Image (cartoon, rainbow, N blue to C red):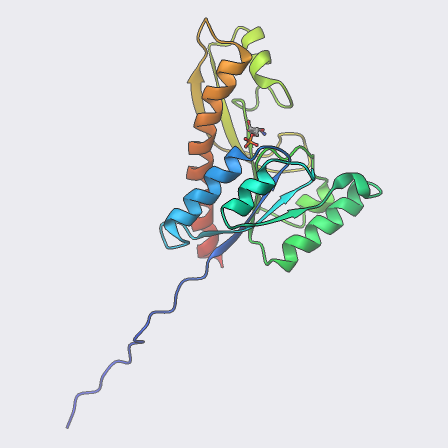
Length: 213
Ligand code: GRF
């Protein structure tokens, strides 16, 4: 008599990736950092995120070419050709769903999303902002931080809601403001920490999302 054997699959089923879309309006250095980090780990358990799609609302955004050079599909949804925000967001929503997107990363995406859109993607949209939120929402954060006499500045990754740079903060990275800093020198140092912070946060959120799937 032979002992019963436990059936073991010869090839373990590969785990399902978490499909990530990145929304941009400009040069896309954060986008590039996120894509490279996902490609390095190849949507393994170390990083379940897979860069599926980049969408720009600006046809001339430098990040579009950068995305294609990294082998990621780049798509333009020019907000100026739509009649109103809702029509633009309907198209955005439909393209994201066609690509079976799980997580949306805004990276220099210069549009505030309406509650119609954000409520359709609960706990699925994150953004990076160059300030220690809740300080300095909006534009020109580096100039404003220096003018306010701050000694520290930095970047925040946060959940996205319908308010400008609103939504709960997920994590932050800090840089010291030096007496010699200009808005440009400060912006450069903050951008470097943005890349590391965003990579870290996306990895963590993609892992958590995978467990929910
Ligand atoms: C970054 O500072 C980001 O935090 C802000 O816009 C800038 C975009 O830079 N929202 P890039 O396009 O990622 O290079």
